[in-house]
Amino acid sequence: MSMISGQLPAHAVMPGGRVLDEVRRLVVTALVAGVGYSFFTSAGQGRCVGGVDADGGFVDRYGQQTDAVPACIDLTLRPSPVVFLVLAAIVAWVVTRVVRRATDEDAALRIIGRAGPAVIVAAIVSVVLSQVAFSAIPLEGWDGTGTPVVPGWLSVDVVISPMSTG
Image 1 (cartoon, rainbow, N blue to C red):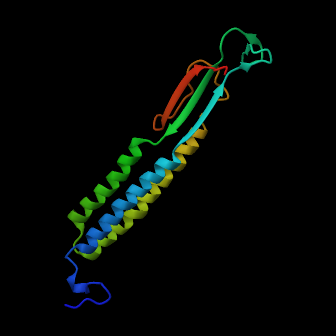
Image 2 (image 1 turned 180 degrees about the horizontal axis):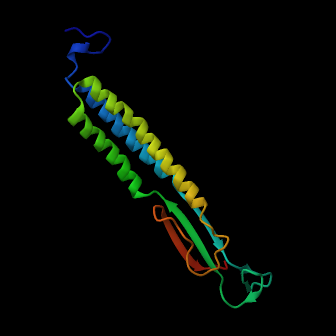
């Protein structure tokens, strides 16, 4: 067996080696998609009802002087752990399907080959849905009491605090 330009001849590749290589590629794709999802699913928005007038006193949301410190709300969008579970479930489902249904190496490679784009699409769709839903949370109508309605599937930190004067 002679090596030409540092590559092994085709018959020297371990049985199933191409399948393992594609599974590794799928796992790396899922990890990169998860990191990308984490990076692009971070956002924040906030609002205070009222403010400070020229004399340093507090005003309410209508501009009237008040002794009460106006309330502020800060919303922070975080990546949802559910999306990471979905990405992992896609990889696990594909590996299981290959083990149970693939009759040869080509069939296994076809199944795995379709999963890579599915992982990427799942991450992109999750980013878009999260950002659109987060930006649609209405803070304009918030009056300083209660919390705005946040869709349950979003991972959002809500902090309500008195306005700082400094």
